[in-house]
Image (cartoon, rainbow, N blue to C red; front, side):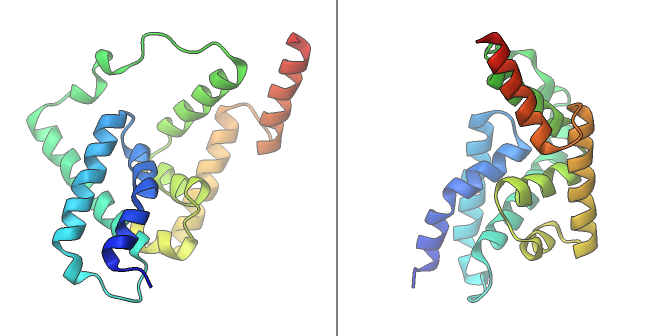
Length: 176
């Protein structure tokens, strides 16, 4: 059995991925992970053995992020939209362009829907763990996930997730 500290270290990649759902800037996401780890290690005595370490860490990260958002709004409004944080050139490959379209569509989702979509759809978190992380009912989680998926498909002009892949494959064959 791994120690609690070993479990935390093993979950760092998942924490980094979850942080990217909150923050586009890689450095800011890494800062959020670091702050989460500091808080987790400082209060490791509060972790209840037998419960899910991943859920506990994600909850700490989520609460840390929202606390920092409130603080930033009071201290420096407008800093998140700074043009200098955006890339100068975008890639031109078909798949890269579609990936950017998907990422932008995910960014436009309401925060609650984006959070659930990334937790369950990207990170593979169980519905039960998502309930604990987000602090809401199972039906709310399922509803947010359904609405997030539907909105993404609508914004991307697809009738199904498979349709998006088939469209790109057809475009690749035509341009070859």
